Image (tube, rainbow, N blue to C red):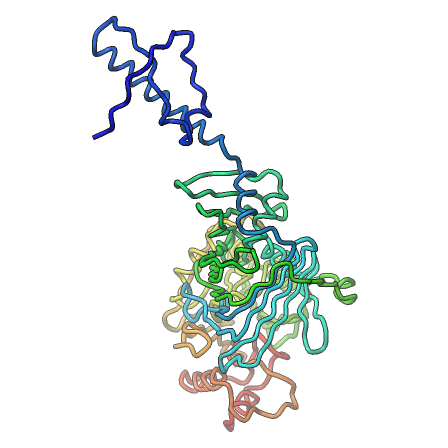
Length: 520
C-alpha cells in the first residue's frame, strides 16, 4: 500500500508555484505538498484534482532532478574519485586474441597467453606504448612493442622502428578508451552529454577524434566501469569495441581497475589482470626520424601471366588470381582492404577490358583474406565460399559501414553467395574453375582449394607460402603444408603449379612436395 501523504497546506491560487530544484530527492519530493483543494464541487472532482497535482509534481520532480548534475559535474566527480593523472603505466598478465582469425567463421577469436603486458600512456603528449611478451609454445618468447604519438605509429623491432601509419588512429583511440583517458577526453571535448539509464549509473557520451562516438558508464562510486564505441572494419563494417573495467584498487591515491576485458566484434580480444600501476609515470615517446618522414605508399600491383586467361596479381603481402571466361571474369581471393581490391580491379580491367567480374572466390574466411569482399559485392560479383562461411559473411557484408563508408555502403548492394559443400564448377565450356571444400587444418576449420584443370594451377591461401628458392626445407614441415599436399593426393588433382596467396609467387608443385619431405 502506498504511504499516506501528509495533509496539504492551504495555499492561495496565485501562490501555486513549484520550484523544480526543490523537488529533487535531497529536500525534494519528500517535501512536496499538494496545494489546498477548494471544498466546493463533488468529492470525485476533488480526487481528480489531487491526482492531477500528483502527476504535475512527479513530472516536475523528474525534470528538476535531471538538472541537478550535468555531464561536466559527473565527470569532475569521477576525476576526483579516480585521481587526476597526466600519465599512467600499468602491467600484468592475461590474454590477447587474434582478431578476425577464428578457426570457425563467426566463433571466438583464438587466444594467445601473455606472460607479461605493459601499457604506458601520456595523456598530455597523446602518446602510448604497449609491450607484450607471449607465453605459450607457439608464440613463446615472441615480443611486440607498439607505439603511437599523435598521428604517427610504429613498432619497435630488432632492427629499429617500423612505421605503422595505418594503425595510428586506432592506437590513438585506445588512449581515450582507458578509464582516465575517457574522463580526460570527455572533459576536453566540452560538449559531452549525460544520460541516466538506471539509478546510480550515469552514461557520458562524447565524440573522439572527430569521428568516434564514445559512451562511458560511471557507477555510483564515480568509477568508470565501461567504455564503448564503434570502429570501422573492412569485413564487419561498423564494429563494436567494448572495454569493461572492474575490481578497482588504490594505487598511490589513484583508483585503477585490476580486471580489464576488451571485446571487439562480440568476442574478447584482451583479458588482463593488472598487478602494478604507476600514476604519473615519466613517459616520453619521441617520434623516430624514419617514422616522421614516412608516408603511406599507394597500393601496388604486379601481374604475371600463368596461362592463357590466368594472371597472378601480386605487388603486396597478399595476392589474387584473375581468371578470364568468354563473357566475364572471376577473381580468386579479395584480401586486406577496399584499397587493395580497387587496385586489383583496376589491374583486371587493364588486362581484360570490358568484362565484368561475376565471381569472387575465397580460400577461407580470415579477415586478411576477406577484407576486400565488400568492394566486389558493390561490383555485383557473387561470393563463392565454403558453405559454413555463408551465414557469417551474409551478416557481415550486409552490416552498415557509416564510420568509413566503402563502395558497397554507397552502392547499397546486397551480397549474393554460392556456398560450397561439395565440388563446385564454374565453366563456359573452355575455361573451368573447380572449387573443393576441405576439412580444414590447424589454421581454419573451413577451407577451399581452387583448381584450374586446363592449366593445372592450384590456388591456395595460408597453407603454403613459398620462401626463397634456395631455402632448405624445414626439419619439421608445418602441418598446414602437409595437409595441403595430402589434400591434393586425396582429391587426385593433377597439379603442376601452385599459385599461393602469400609468398614469392607461383611455384612448381614439386617445391611443395620437397618442402613437406615428399618426392614427386
